[in-house]
Image 1 (cartoon, one colour):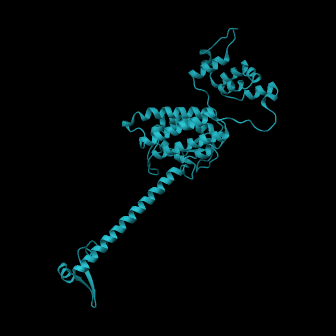
Image 2 (spheres, rainbow, N blue to C red):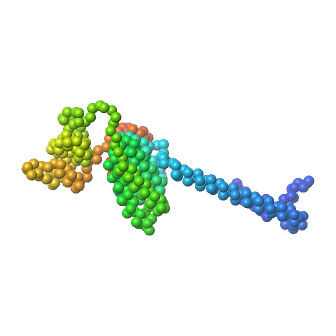
Image 3 (cartoon, helix red, strand yellow):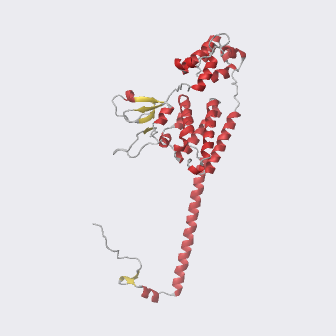
Length: 357
């Protein structure tokens, strides 16, 4: 049983050590026995100790503040958990408390390593684009900071590799437009954090966009075979592997020979049939002056009316048995007899839709 009585060393009493042992002295005896000099000496010691304590506390706080500022300025790597998977559930149970949010999933999944993988790069970029359009205010402060840190790594990767310049520029434009509309609603407390920090981040976005505009693609120094050295049939075969019509247009501007090949009717027809259904194509038929279907014009008209078909080398997956989101090459603690039968591939929009409660 705990002792609930008053402590025998209660405050307000002083004890003096004598030859017979410890004796309690009252306030009257203390005043009679104590001298003015000892009292002043104690007061000076107490004041000196208080000053030293305040100085040490101020020095400690200043040191901690400098250390925190140094970490915020120099550290660009976001924090991620060791497990590269996460439970996704929409309610609380006896076994699991709370629910999973988009910000938590964004922090737990290893996107820093995903952008280094060519198969996952476009998937992560598309996911960042969708979050920038509508889901940026739903992220927590740490998740928003990690979002911008990952975006900075993506920009740096594009500057180093000189590849995928156009989609990243479009992503920066989308993010800047979304932030402009959110910053105007300051009174509604939409964004987490100080408004000055968001203005500073918007300046960084403009700076990244300027760096991408000034990028100059260097020609390789090797004197090997070029694309134009290949036969026309192989060049067309390579062009059929491109899934974006804008890439074909840019390729045709390299030289007149490639420009003539990019005008191939069969090339644009297969591109339209890949991205759009037959019903969508029949609604947007365009006939040329010669009486033939102009598949090139139809492609760009259809792309303005309907979304393009998304294609990724690797995506996030959802285990329907244990409700875990993970990358395909990441092991997760699944208890199903046949885990592969329970795995469902997630598009970027499907991944975000998991957190719309």
